[in-house]
Image (cartoon, rainbow, N blue to C red; front, side, top):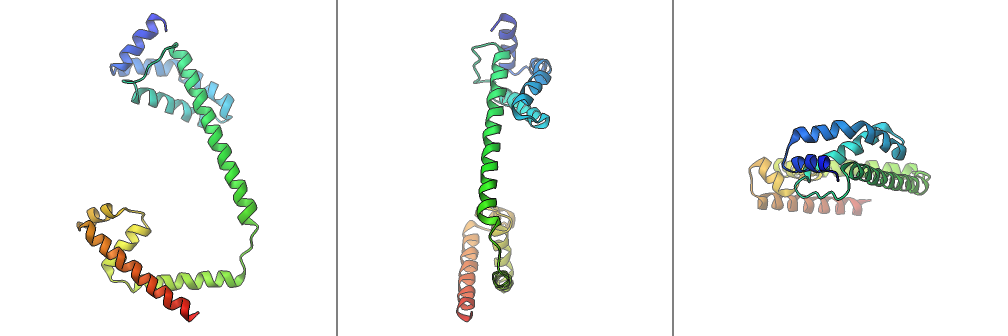
Length: 183
């Protein structure tokens, strides 16, 4: 790293946002064009470059650059682009697996009817729960909230949430058992 780069990087490490902006303006466009060579998409390349700069700023206190800033930036962008390509490759692989294993399976009319009937039974069981119990169950299962988040939102204890969830699940098991025996 030459003296000028060393000075700029030292100021960035000390939290000088102006020097960081100078660095950003100097390299942003060049790095975006460089990234496009890997990811073949300007928006994705811009996102990679922005993430790279974000990580430099976020980790500025612990970051050590032994080469030039320019070499560090280009290497970081290349590595991040390669990570995007690996992720994209996995996404395509899983999508193809899903298509070949699950899309060709046709759902029989009786399976579809059974699914609708089961959905109705579940809705009846849900609606037969006490209001507070149903509210807590929906917050947990529909909204994906954790017990402590539900307790906080409703201003109740976590134990109350646990008790109501236990009651709801017991009710569902009982209701669905009765349904299964009737079918």
